[in-house]
Length: 336
Image 1: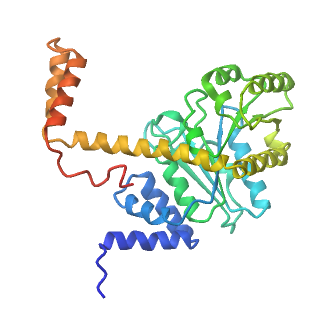
Image 2 (image 1 turned 120 degrees about the vertical axis):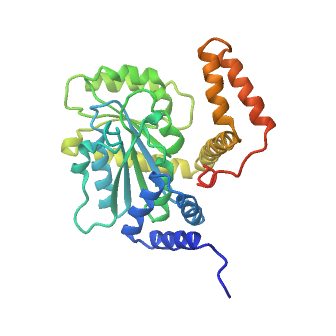
Image 3 (image 1 turned 180 degrees about the vertical axis):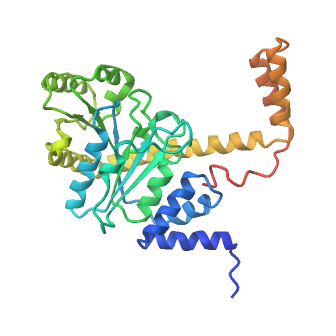
């Protein structure tokens, strides 16, 4: 019987099969398609998503200079020692010249030669808010389909405004250092609310004990079943890493017990679906015939004072709702 599927769809299903079968070259190519928002990414992700969810996503965030990259490397190696296939998504600031990731400390995280159980991928933030790349979640879905049981996601490290990681990660680790002036600001920025585990790295320096007490006091006021531990590490020496991994596994077990993990996943899926629908509606709205030209006209009107920006926006909305949409964009977010 003739296969009615399109060549593009058949090709993505074949790539999905190779990814799930452990083909690392196919895995690297799949993540590149996703990161570059290629049209083929949508069919690929749909083919992969049918294989179910089984990974534990760990988000690692905190201010610059906290030693997140070194700590993530230590966590990854500790999980590899346990036989757990581990992926690392390291989000870096974008180069102002190329738009690509500035690799920073990533070269020190390289896996041992021949170790297919550790895969590290740097992704450029490309100006995205929240300390992540626009396609971080999709990349984690590819890793999940490839059989990685642990996925570590390291944010840019801008300190504030990185709360988006809490939507994506099952466990969020907030890393601080004793002498960092950003520590208090990070606490004020909402990270006290998103952290499931707090780590004072570079704990061999003065002030570590005082910072541990401060975080413990602040975190202790949260009304919830899980009480965030506050740990001390010296990542450059590997100190405290086993205790951190034990805490990560404790939180993983906590999520699995009592249905908290499923309830949390449902909340995250609601947020993700909302974002996909909003992005698709936005793309559909701007596909209305003549709307971009009308935008230019109304921008001129607003610039010369004929209209306010609010009046111009209201006019565009009225025109968008009155006109029939053109064909939906092939690369819409829902398709992805």
